[in-house]
Amino acid sequence: MALTAAQKQRLETLLSKKSKTAVDAILATAKAFLDWLQGAAKDLWSALKDIVKDIWNEIVSAFKK
Amino acid sequence: MDKKTTFLKGLFELAQSGHAPDSLRRALGSETADRLERLVSQERATNPPRVVVIGKAGVGKTTTINNLFSAEFRVSHALRGTSAAQLKEFGLRGGGVLHIVDMPGLGEGLVEDKIFEEIYREELPKADVILYVLEADERLLGEDQRIFNEVILPALADGKGRSLVVGLNKVDLLGPGSWDTALNYPDEELEKAIHGRCTDIARKLASQVRGLEAKNINYYSAELRYRLDELQITLIKAAGKAAWKLPVQTKDPFELASPEVQEIVREWREAQE
Image (cartoon, rainbow over all chains, first blue to last red; front, side, top):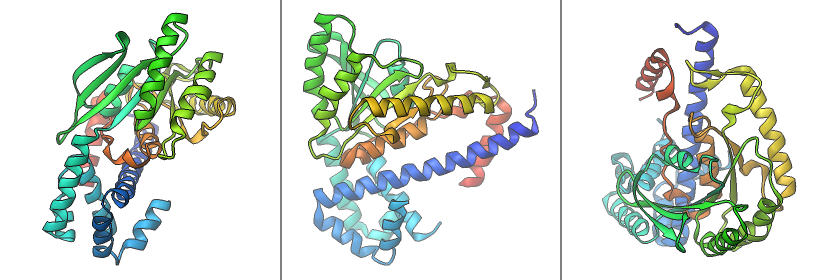
């Protein structure tokens, strides 16, 4: 049976929700990785932070959202 | 994709697969990328992620594990000679392993409970994250409350930044409303009922168990793959510094939807790439 207009609308909402949770998973994992790296290899964490210093503040704000 | 997103996605892929993607390699340079890859492989080999899943028989622990992590089961060992408590090893995409400690809930009998409680005390401190699975319409017994308050939460209070996650499974069996089989999703009436009911349960649970935060109580249906993504993010946030090692690969709920929906989803994904 073909999808109704309401089901199509709902599917669109679901897909956009799915995109958002995928981004949340990336952010949560990346944040945990950087937190771990800071304790496990401080020199490497500092080098990394230095390399991306132009976007570091944006990264930190993304984690806070 | 902007520079920040590309960088974070690169870190995510490195954490998940152990390999720095080209975008990250270009941004960091080969030497730093190689060092990161070595560090990740070493950490994964030395300290595989360890998830403890607790719940009574029939609550859906095995389906939860299978559909949440999509990892390949390799081998299992009984803990302290009881087949009810097992350490299961799963293979991960990109190499490495995931350890799942599958433990029964209490209330099976005095002798069994004593053995299980000893296993809890041994295993919980070693866990990166603990998931306690309940059926959404199950009442929390006095014994569950005691085990939360006296065994689980104290085991997590060691400064490693981990918290307990409670999963309310089988929410598709709640009502009123029905399951939309074409979308493989609850219809609006059922979704509203699930949300209302589970919010109430979460509030009650958080008030009964000291130290359990309502945000760490998640409802889902493992069998129908409903809200597994949300549960996964909660687990990542609850796992503290080891969280980056957890596999982010829940089974796709749209695989259980109608062919028409699958086609729309396929086209949508292609457009996203």
